[in-house]
Amino acid sequence: MSEPYYKPEDLADFPNIGEHSPELAASFFDYYGKATGAGRLTEREKALIALTVATVRHCPYCIDAYTNKCLSLGVGSDEMMEAIHVGAAMVAGDTLAHATQIRKIVRKKEM
Amino acid sequence: MDPRQQLEMLEIPGRRESFVERLKAVEMFPLCATGVAILQLNITRRCNLTCRHCHVEASPDRLEMMSQEVLAECVRIAHISEIDTIDVTGGAPELHPQLPWLLRELAATGKRIIVRTNLAVLTEGVSQSFPQIYRELGVEIVGSLPDYTPERTDRQRGSGTFARCITAIGQLNKIGYGREGTGLVLNLMHNPSGAFLPGNQPSLEHEYKRRLREGFGVEFNGLFVLTNCPIGRYLDYLIGSDNLNDYMAVLASAFNPAAVSAVMCRNTLSVGWDGRLYDCDFNQMLGLKVNGGSPTHIREFDLKRLSRREIMVRNHCFACCAGAGSSCQGVLDT
Image 1 (spheres, rainbow over the protein chains, first blue to last red):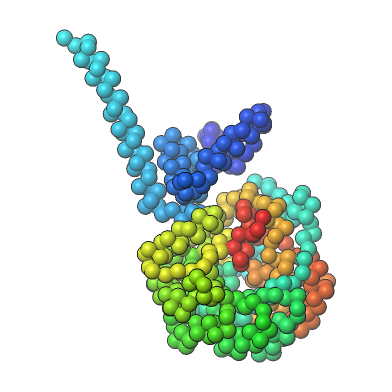
Image 2 (image 1 turned 135 degrees about the horizontal axis):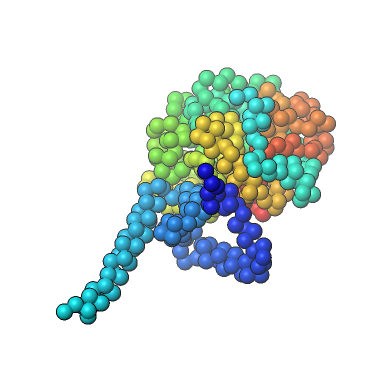
């Protein structure tokens, strides 16, 4: 069996992502730290947002990192699932909302 | 599992460097003590609980109790001016019949006295008298409450434990502990209910305060966040749940040299029930006595030599040096 593209240990390599572009990576990590740190929203609230985005975007690294972060911050599995349902509902709504384009084209093209 | 086997289990996966090698890489090896400001006394391994994360592997069946002779030696050493804090732990210290005597003797030193309690014990039998004794002697209480939810706490400590802890905190609040302006300090200790690192201490403290106040009407002063050390029953849990390799990799990845310089073993001396000396309570459970050149029993206490001793480090030390660091006083000041 061939090796999988995604390996859990690759997550630990993320800090080295600036290997060929250190200045841009430094800018990214600075921005990332500020955006995900506590502000008007708590660190806990931001971790749940990040977990939801990670799951919607199907990023295995981020799902791993933010599930652990949520556990560390005392977020319950029921709370994590509640957040994921927001993501799932948004994806479903987003899909259905785009059916508007189908309906518009159909209206125009059909006799 | 005996201590030697436990240490062998703590290999770092993925050919990562050992704790000693990491210290060498940041030029912090050997790690040496800076003094002895805190004397931590583990007076018994007996406990009313059998928690799944307990590094002491304490339980109602344990028989180890500090003898009167060793207790008296500890009191004598507690008078030394360089020592500013005496930290009493176990097991459940309340199950040692000489605890009231010890606390009265220690109170006479005028030093800061801390008792680490599992809280639930304060709702049982004769131990119910301890809150008043603590108050009378100005003892600072550190109460173990792994989580603010009953489910997660009880998974770790046994069914019904959370409710008993809440009852105990309520009783302590009634006599002034955990209330602002009373000077009676009640801090709580959090440790993760699983194979992950603890979160940010201020974030967790905020959540604990809100949930315990709104849900149960109880208060406390501060929250200490402790990283679970991969030894004792917690090691058994990590092995049994196939989490050991991941947990060690996470600890090693989170190694923080800034935490090393503030790590508590540098100014703490841990005394076992039999009077033997260790760098910390974790080393005590692993049988790693203080460095060979230092006195190894409280009877031979020598401040000068112990203050300069080389700390005995192994891979379990990654737990105290991960992320923001971890200690019996919560995260390290880095």
